[in-house]
Image 1: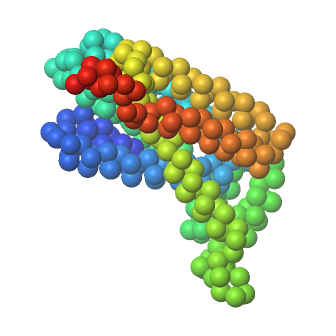
Image 2: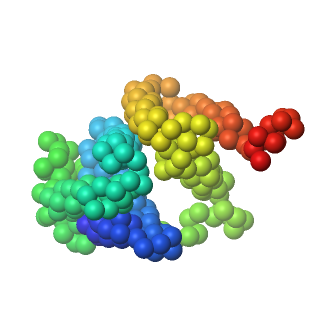
Length: 279
């Protein structure tokens, strides 16, 4: 987590002070590595340290933290653009868009500071023969059932020590269908292009005729909607089930993203007069 925070900070400074497109891409890749690491480490840590009774809710709250973070980031971008009078206008010696990147240092430092205050996960400690420290960590988050939790952790550690790629294959040597389903869900979750909406929504709003200020406002409102729907999902996930909720969300994404793609398609002028006006 501390290393991920360091990558965030490096990316923030590099992106904010970029000289051209190529080094900006480089610094964004560095930030992407940090995001990828944090996206794996944080839910794994939650699963390993949280009591079973609240593990699911804490996992859902991580998603809530992500969408709230997106909202705060967009809100800060809106504020900086408003103060400067535009994203490309000068502000405190630099263009406003550069400060939008540099502002990432604040949450990055906070992330590192909080990461330094938390203990190692009990599973990591057990895997490294530090059972006493693992028991101490568990006693700080659990009132009872510590012995049972220690036994469970030991079983998973022993089982994973014997795990191999063959565990994903059936008797015929082919990859199990459930593995393909898991891979497909992860891949298509990104391939739908929702990250484009998050990262470039202001540009998309301007592409359909909104001013820069209105586009930033719409972006903030979109992120608020994201938070509201995440709350609804947290409330419904244990009532209607994961599969039905996933199906509803997938159908909604198909309709809305398909509609957006249609709206943004370039269209030829409808008449010779329109063509002349464009010329």
